[in-house]
Length: 95
Image 1: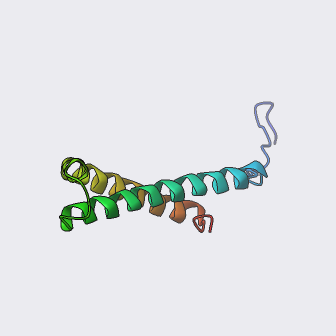
Image 2: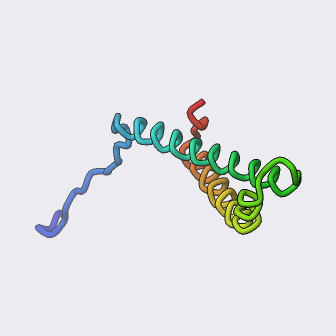
């Protein structure tokens, strides 16, 4: 017996096939990969400036000594963000 309060609710399935999401993923992967490359280059320059005394001026060595820890932290954060993004979206860093 159907009561007036009974409601027949159909199954609801979300549709995740929006075409612009793929574009967002590509743009985000380019930004993350570009930032990771910049931080990697900064880390290599700072390490080389500290490791080889005649390679850089005193000002560059001072900058490297003061900022190498922050560069390591930025590399760790960007690496974690890249890994999580790759795990969630399964992207290939745009290359």
